[in-house]
Amino acid sequence: MIRHSEKEISWYTWKLFSPWEDRLLAGISTRKGGFSNFPYSSLNLGHRVGDNPDSQAANLAAVSEALGIPGAEWALCRQVHGTRITEVRQEKGEDPGDCDALFTDEKNIISAVVLADCLPVVIYDPVRHCGIVSHAGWRGTASGIAEKSVQKLIETGSRIEQLLAAVGPGIGSCCYTVGKETAREFSESFDYPEGVVIRDRKGRYRLNLEKANLSRLRNIGMKENNIGAAGFCTACRNDEFFSYRKEGGLTGRHAALMVLL
Image (cartoon, rainbow, N blue to C red; front, side):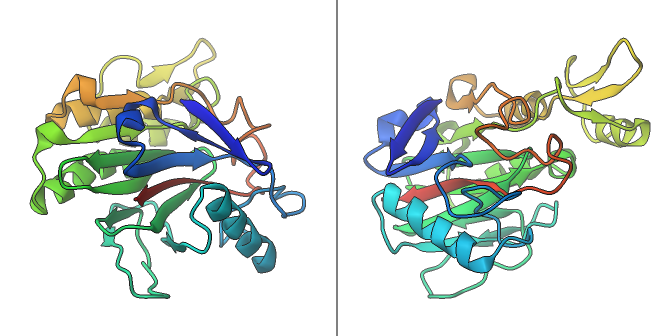
């Protein structure tokens, strides 16, 4: 990934999308440079985590200004660890409601999902100039949010061979242990390749959500060269990203966002 910074705000973009940077802004924010106090310090973009609403609003405004689109409308869904995809429209103040992915084909709207260890899956069609940003925790991954995002784009007119998909960052198997029942439920949701559900030397179960989503995208027919991954763990880097697991559940949220220019 490529790191950017402006006015104390930093964010990362996926190398996969670099050829279209004049038409697409797709990236993930960090936790630094905002206005929120501990434990949401400091660039919390989550709106349902207990932070002061004024601080969160100031953080959203600071990010849009740093991105060079001051005053841009934000579309933030109320995430429920499901697979519902909502279409984002220009109407001011329209609430996407309960969903875990946003489809957009309109310019200058910041479509975003908020995260703290869950992974984003961002899919872009450079031919039709539209895309989907989605939130994939273990439940969303197991329920096929990545495939359903691809299917949504195909239903609206995209061809699978022209789609580009970026996965992560999120918590890695190095830090993500789960119980036996969660591991079983996850394993039964898809025929994952080796290394997705891991049992370590201490008998603990670990999940590799990045590898899981990559395998599901390949399985639905996406080209290998059209898929990219972040390749690092947000819990290991919680000095830079929020980590629900590392911080005991009380923390802020960074955001994966997509803006069509």
